[in-house]
Amino acid sequence: EDKVVQSPLSLVVHEGDTVTLNCSYEVTNFRSLLWYKQEKKAPTFLFMLTSSGIEKKSGRLSSILDKKELFSILNITATQTGDSAIYLCAVLGGDSGAGSYQLTFGKGTKLSVIP
Amino acid sequence: NAGVTQTPKFRVLKTGQSMTLLCAQDMNHEYMYWYRQDPGMGLRLIHYSVGEGTTAKGEVPDGYNVSRLKKQNFLLGLESAAPSQTSVYFCASRSRRPGVLEQYFGPGTRLTVT
Image (tube, rainbow over all chains, first blue to last red; front, side, top):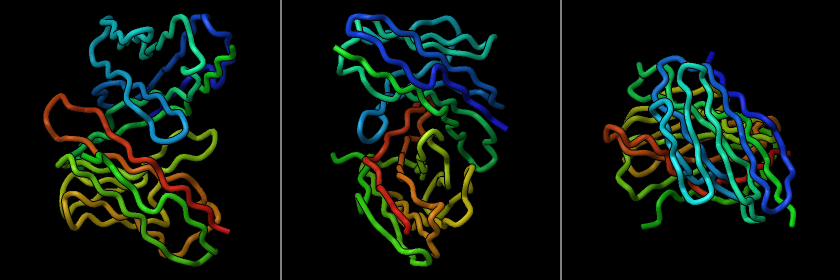
């Protein structure tokens, strides 16, 4: 059974701190790993990682994938209150017999940034 | 360009009632998905579709049916609602183009079954 495990499940930091969110996975037919940010409503896309060791960066957020050790990290530097959200890790893979790979989601990390 | 829309946004059902959730996308995406999100459980795939007229079961399909009669619409049906189906339901879609793996999500439907 495909599995995605995120840690920690929740985190409280002060503005300006740097945080690292973890995601480990066991998925058959791995295709890629995606990070999403979920505030009050729908998840919004942050990054997609397909190759090991290549850092993706967007402003204060960055992420990297290790396909040998089967994990990814999401870093947020100089955190702001607007970074407060649930961060979801999802891995695309599984059985493509029905014509499409599926996303398996972790339970998410709830980040709270306090002023 | 509205992206992915879902109706209704909220609904309260009594046990045993039926209802249909509608998902519509205007991005001409081939693949569409229905997820449910429960506290502490992440998102779990209910059913998905790789094209008009085709559907497949996901991780938690029991108690739900789906139909994809038109490419832009994906319907999720509950024939006899149960309290265990109280959840937030998200629809998503993505393109079939090679290398385009991002799924776009709708705003969600909050369903309560009493």
